Image 1 (cartoon, rainbow, N blue to C red):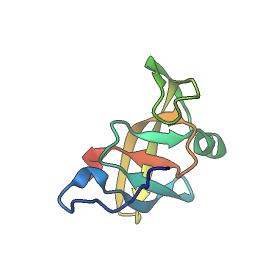
Image 2 (image 1 turned 60 degrees about the vertical axis):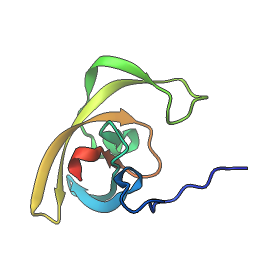
Image 3 (image 1 turned 135 degrees about the horizontal axis):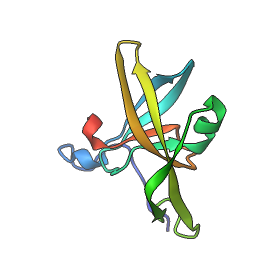
Image 4 (image 1 turned 90 degrees about the vertical axis):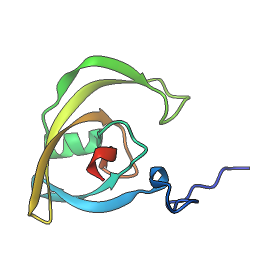
Length: 113
């Protein structure tokens, strides 16, 4: 039987299960982003990187990534420094691991909460 996943925490005081979904602007495009307190990395979709022509750099310490799909052998070997805006007021820049994402374009780790 498949395990059920919820965006709502089973224990309201447990922040590790909460996801904050919002929109940010990268270059001239407004995209979906998630703040995931359970994530340990900032992630950006390789499709977004390609679509917006964002520059990437080689990862200084490439590593395998198995938690997205254990059947697929994936290696994180590129990074992208992305500048983004929230409502045009808050502007920030962060370094993200470039990965094949299909649930959203950006996943921020817990320090953004």
